[in-house]
Image 1 (tube, one colour):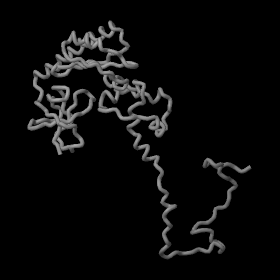
Image 2: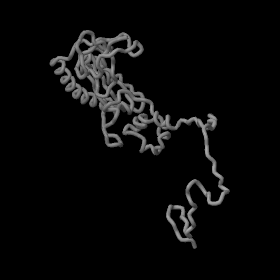
Image 3: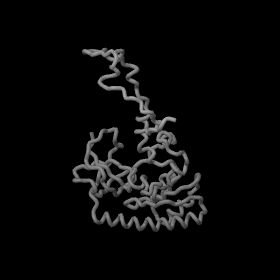
Length: 270
């Protein structure tokens, strides 16, 4: 077993495990950690806990320290640099006439790499664009093509329900969603009714899918498989052929010339 803490680098982003060591860390602390991409700044969202080896990615990286005031200032400076880099990249894309849409820019904490996220209908040859950006920023440049669901997650917005998008507020990972889930829930199959702003099936179709599956599973008919129990005890019989015995302690009422019309209301016979 390994003792870890869960760290998230973006809002509603994926949670990664790190070894806390002897550092006193609680949920909500900002920390500096070592990652495969270099030194990064993140927020602790899961406190210390024990996990098995299958739940971690080896080798397990360490939490270097709690974030200081200087680290917080560095994060704010990186955000200002990201806005500037976004504008410059837009100009370079236009000058190269590339069929791509820039979505977001991300600086690594130590400024060792800049990642540009974009969408496009197909493959894009951006080699010349990378050279231009590297000559401007003098650091490692990475262009990463993303899908429409990741685009919605990064940009945010309001869903058809009127609430902020699930993917942009709390969903760490995208789970597979199929049209079968909509059918199981007896929802309209009109694409405009079951699609999110990304144009794909809404993630919330997955939330209650398992409950509908359990309800619709065929229930075993126990009465057809189990025999009736043998009668036991004493009983008392009645002879219905004797005069005056029409039931058990009740007299048969005389007809008063009216009958019910099937809705619980009485009407006169014609």
